[in-house]
Image 1: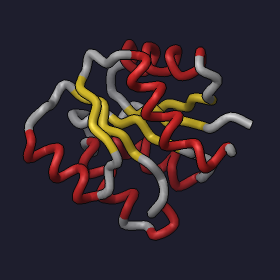
Image 2: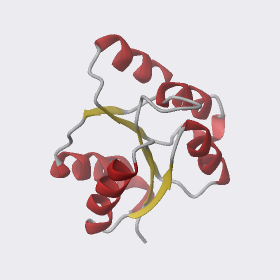
Image 3: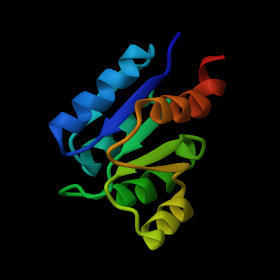
Image 4: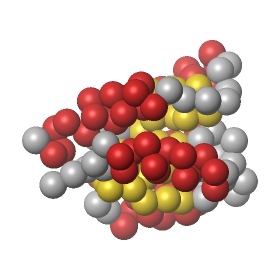
Length: 125
């Protein structure tokens, strides 16, 4: 059984690129276009890892992390931020809210896969 990864990004091309990279490595991929849709999809269950942009309409990625982690049922859900942002204060804030990692776009496929494999190892082993 392979892990299911939720890709949350308002850019269709980024969702497609990240999704294709993950699918080639055997992951199941579902998508959301913003933090609101991402949060709602997480609440439905069955997500093993989240790759999330920061800058999105309706609810940004950091707000989504904060809202997701406010639910104790999501305490162990790994969330990795994938963004063009590199500001230390944003990284610190995301990690304080519960994000497990921060990858700057454009991403290297091998690093993304390695991060997701590490974070989902316990749910598929």
